[in-house]
Length: 234
Image (tube, rainbow, N blue to C red; front, side, top):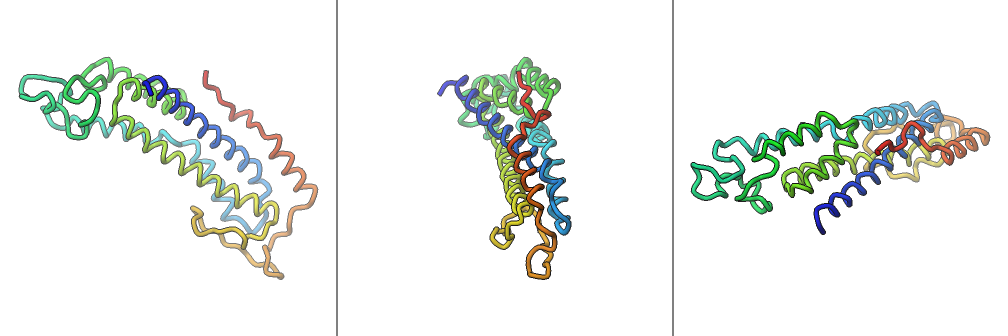
C-alpha cells in the first residue's frame, strides 16, 4: 500500500469514527430529556460523556506528540542526519527510530526545518480536533514517520474506547426511557455506577413513559440528523 493510499484509508477510518461519535452524541442529547426521575446518576453520566466528547481526541494527542518528539532529541548526537561527531549515521538516531525508512539517513520531520514548520502549522491552524487528527495522520504517512504513527494510533485507540463507552451509555438510556427491565442488561463493564431504585413491585421507581412520549422519542431518534453536528470538512 503506497503512502497516499494509507493516508486515505486512515482518514476514511477517522471520518467513520467521527460520524459514530456525532451520532451517539446527538442521540444521547435528545434522549437525556426523557430520562425519568430516580436515574440521576445516569443523567449525570450522559452529561459528563457529552461534555468530554468535545475534548476528544486531540486534547492530549498534541501534547503527547510534542513530548514524544522532544524526548527523541534529548541526546546531543541525535540530530537525525549524518553529522560530524558520529562514526555511524545510525548513531544520529535514537533506538526508537530503528526500523524507520529514514533511520541512518535524514529524518524529514526532525532534521529539516520545513518538516518541523509544517508540523507546527498543523498544530496552529487546524480548526477542530478532528481536522488536526486528520492532518497529523496524513503528515505521518507522507513522511513515513513511525513515531508519529504510533502516537496517532494511541490517540485513535483512545477515541475508539470513548465511542464504545458512549454506545454503552446509549444502551442504558434506551433501556431506561423504554422501561426495559434493567436486570436484563449487564452492568459490570459500564464506565459508571448506576443505583437502580426499587419500586413497590421491585421494578424501577419511575413510571414508564407514556405511549405518547415513547412515540415522540422514536420519532426524534429517527429524525435526528444533527444539523449542528454535520461534517463541515471541505
